[in-house]
Image (cartoon, rainbow, N blue to C red; front, side, top):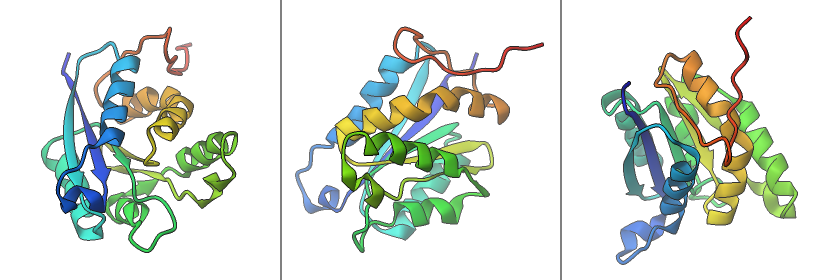
Amino acid sequence: MAKAKIGIVTVSDRASAGVYEDISGKAIIDTLNDYLTSEWEPVYEVIPDEQDVIEATLIKMADEQECCLIVTTGGTGPAKRDVTPEATEAVCDRMMPGFGELMRAESLKFVPTAILSRQTAGLRDDTLIVNLPGKPKSIRECLDAVFPAIPYCIDLMEGPFLECDEEVIKPFRPKAK
């Protein structure tokens, strides 16, 4: 069985400003390590809030590095420099609005400012791209909500079979008839 490649992209202007500890990207990696029992390889980048850089990174991870899943963190708010959703939409063939809807609904249970989030998801050929917020606590809350659908989505795109620790997260896969 092929090892799944999963892209993790942290979008932050602080990254290009010098010393920067990326706790958000690490939170994604830690969460995926908690969820997945199948082998996977992180393809990890920290990049600035620049739409052309975000687009180029997503394209490279999907097309050249063959990631089945790319998870971004940061750049989903209402600030002028927050352009991750625009970059995601620009490189995707089809959008998956249910992901953003569910993440916002889940986040609203914790903070009223969740309505300011513009998280989205989309498909680029055989790659699912999911935009997450930037705070580690919110990352886990959002991934807990949407991840049960991710392995089946990747199955439908004929990607690698993602096995999960069902004590931690239970993926949904329809039962064969």
